[in-house]
Length: 349
Image (cartoon, rainbow, N blue to C red; front, side, top):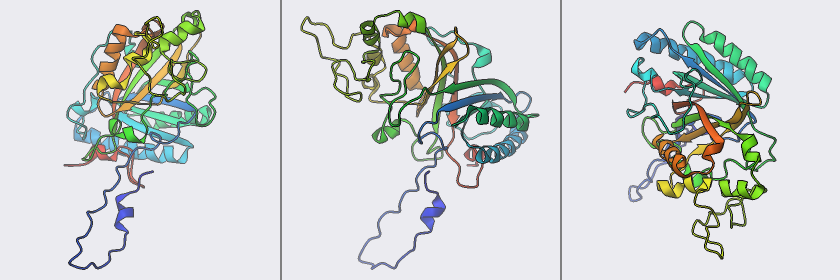
């Protein structure tokens, strides 16, 4: 976890010769909420809440106190907790969030269930044991009583995945190959300033038509995605993380990666290199309702909007998926040791 300002302040100060200029002060690393840049845990439980009957500074004080209690609960359980707030909450409660934070626009092909979309407050719990997550969620619900009303709850899991490998989705393809590495963190974390270490979460509950996709031949499936199913390498490539060659053609003049392949429409080159950190989970709510909990973190939700509109126009994967729930959250920076979840939301100035 990132070091705190106190850790830097403990350095010993030595006298210097006036002829030798002192180096510039070391920057204090931005704090991030735990669970976002650590290894992805195998189970997730998303808890969405509304603040139905309160507004103003008194509501902010009550919410701050509740988050303090939640912090203690999650730290004593074997879980990580990521907190986000929805765009409607700062319009009623004084919170420090980026000025341009707003709702996602309507997007082509959406079939959103309002009862399973949106949130004033969202907690993403992750851990190794789904029973522990459920018990922790029940306790958090009880603590929230009288202030927050539960809106929806959604569980997800990762399929068994060998350490260091990219998880697979219900189409049996690797999902998350193009996640940004250390060099791409500027696309995920807000830069220096009051929100440094914060990010935005776009959540989509995406139903997957697995039977229809399974009806395609293996070659057809790979043409839809633009990658090999066995090891995730792009068509024409040798390794999973090879950069796709979108100009490569077969001897008869066809693109090796078809013009409608999913990885073409989603590729960062179309957005100036901007990427999202995707930490998705499989969900299964019955044989006719299963798919992907798309959880993507980025510095600007407009990136998701651009990509989604582009995929609706040209992505061969579109007929096999349906977006049924949605939310956008501001995820504030992490709190120093001993502080509460979301403490920066209530900071003055």
